[in-house]
Length: 160
Image 1: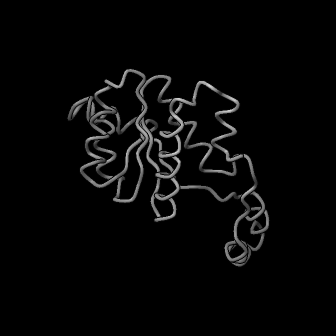
Image 2: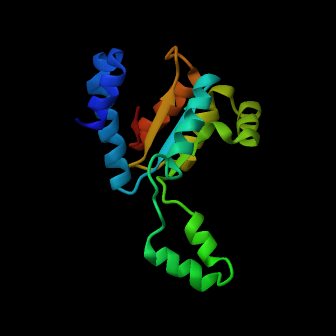
C-alpha cells in the first residue's frame, strides 16, 4: 500500500481528491529533484498550516535524516570542539520558506505597496522556475494568496 493509499484508508473522505493529492506529491517530488524549493502562504489558520508544513520539511519529520559523511567531515574540521555536536544534531531537510513569517516585510509591503501584494512580492523575489508554491485559502478568494499564485505562474513556479 502506498503512502497515499494509507492516507485515504485512514481518511476515507479524501478519496474524492486522491488524484489531486497524487498530482501535488508528484509536483513536490519533481520540484525537489530538480533542485527547487517550496514556498508556502495563507491567512489565519491557513498561515499556521503554511508554517507547519515548512517546519516538518526543514527537519527530519518521521525519520532521521543524518547529515552526509562529507558534511560531518567539514563540521569536524571547521569546528574541532563542536563539530561532533553539530553533526549529531543537524538533520537533513527539504528547502522550504514560509512567506507568512516575514513580519516586518509583510507590514512594509502592506503599507508601502498594497496588502494584497504581501505574498506576491516575496514570490517574485524568492521564487525561481522549478520551485513550488502552496497557497492555502479556505475560501479560494484571499487576494494576497491569489496574487502570489498569479506571480508564481508568470515565473514558471508550479502551484498547489
